[in-house]
Length: 126
Image (cartoon, rainbow, N blue to C red; front, side, top):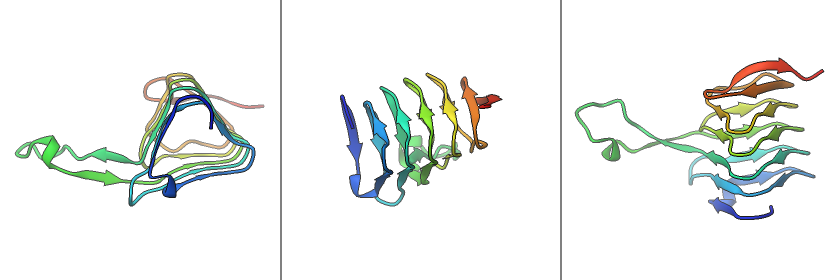
């Protein structure tokens, strides 16, 4: 890990061989983990967080509805660009590229290039 990197619940964060993180917010929870595979490149200001607010009950304030906790799994040989966000419960498949500023809300396909908000498959690596 390099630069300014905030890590929460490091006991639930697993980083593979030859992977690096250039800074950002890597937030596991006490009941969900972040797994980063081998040979991954994670750029500056990337946000990984395994919990999210519950919000569906209109009769209860959002702040009083608690959280849902889900693992984030990142495969091998993945490049996540500057400022991307990987949401709770997402699995990034092997070989993916996640573009700068993308917000990944769903699982990806192997060797896909994902861009945008929400992130969508643009093409496959050749």
